[in-house]
Length: 387
Figure 1 (cartoon, rainbow, N blue to C red):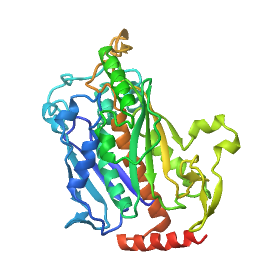
Figure 2 (figure 1 turned 90 degrees about the horizontal axis):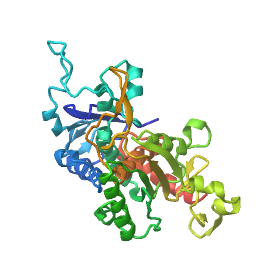
Figure 3 (figure 1 turned 120 degrees about the vertical axis):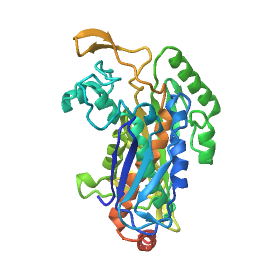
Figure 4 (figure 1 turned 60 degrees about the horizontal axis):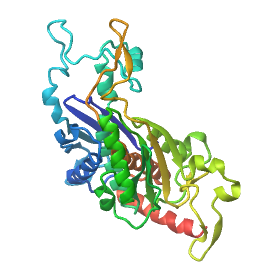
């Protein structure tokens, strides 16, 4: 691994912190670029009130000088504005008395990390679990991913996403020549207006019932250099890194590359991508059923990843649970939450894929400065065209 990153912080703590290590020097980076992607993460019909509270303005506090990266670790911080109302609840220092903490959680929510996290870390108050397990952490991953996608853009790599399912409403419209701004303008980030309206109705129905919804989103990366990843060892296959990144995202339960599970229902003649002559590159693919990755390596085709997200675990009409203080049956704890976060998850997915691809690019080409990496990528592109 060439690119490393860490995040820290709690959902209602003072701030989120992120460190990204391994990027070369000379990359132009500013807070405005980070803010633009942070605002996209707040998009989507069905989000909760928290999105109106947080500005998600990211500060660059290390690794950048005079608008360019220095080659050292990049350090970012993101203030949680909602912390002002939670300062006493989330205090870091030990209180003088042994009075129970306000907003303590002793009733776990089915489908959440509450109960198992409490067992694993020996925490009686599951507030200590849900604060870190919260999807609020992804605000910092988007910030770190924005740095990665800014780096990838220097090589022509572009990332896009869209929602293809929310509940029972589906949009299987083929990708067309559409700008990211047009997709973001949809209330659910779908391509088809009729499908988008059906998705909104699904969310409204679930909200009225105190329920939540999941769905499926798709992330696409175009103009990715050929040959990233490797078949030579199991942990260097690129699909493994893609799967790990997406499955680390809250509520994600399934990841497909290309046809994914759909390939299992096809014959080989319908599942693979035939070659045909090409005057510039000698051969080219007739289709992209593999989703841009074959044998653990990028093919030069668009990388297409589909991701299945389960419904959010916090329900306003809660499921049955148990009060761990008494052992008595009761309803699950309710924490402020979204009804549906699939459109936001799609935006987060762009950042996750960017982090994976930026790492894979640096593993293959190396280089301590942006110019050095660019020269190596150019040389490789010429070599690959001749093969």
